[in-house]
Amino acid sequence: MFVRNIGVVTFEAQNENHGKLMKYFYRKNGWHGLRKFNSFKDNGDGTVTLFLIRGYETIISAECLPLVLETSKVSISIKMSGIYATTRIKEKTTDLHRLFMREELAKYEGFEKETGMSIQVNHRNENPLDNRLSNLEVVTDRENYLKYQLNHAKGYYKTPSGKFEVKFRNKNVGTFETEAEARKAYVHAVKKEIKRLEEIRMNWLKSNGHL
Image 1 (cartoon, rainbow, N blue to C red):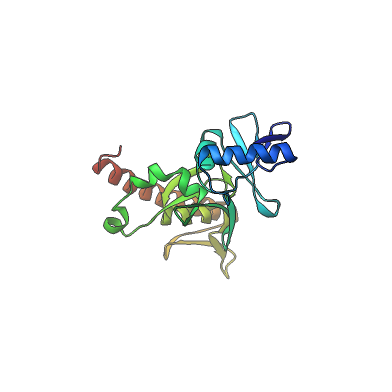
Image 2: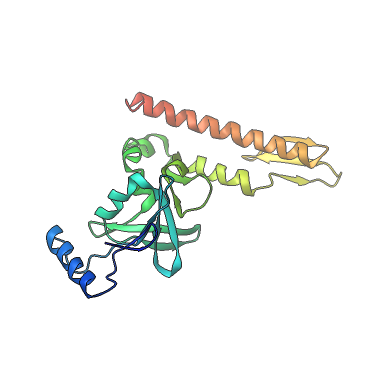
């Protein structure tokens, strides 16, 4: 590896001597010739930026860098919900956020079969390329959906009378004089449901010896 700029490390040989050194690294570590690595930058704040293809970047916790270097080169996957950082492990493509949360995810084996809810990894700030551990949380699919709704769904509509009606989960929450009151009622209903789902998840973990 070579320092390209201040704090930036690249695995691309910059000259003939670098090329010879890279061959030595590959031979010393038993890497095959097709194995590639991402250039990266230590941000000096406990995080590292990985440089991906097409100019994309993903930020990770510095403690996760050794794990990344043990896998194949991190690339991107374009999905309807955004652009995600992915890697390959044993010929299988894995999302980077799921790789980092693998130990937490393992605790939920059998959860979906018992509850009917799947387990997902949520990016708290909704940026799928922000893979710092502090930005990742394991939640149910329903929690994930509701957290998204909090930020993107208005949650109410204006009636012919000029008032504002709130419905949640096909139930009437109430009718309010102002949009602010309606929004507040919707947020309260959603947060209450998120808390209920979280309690189900926590109780399941506890009953299975994971808390």
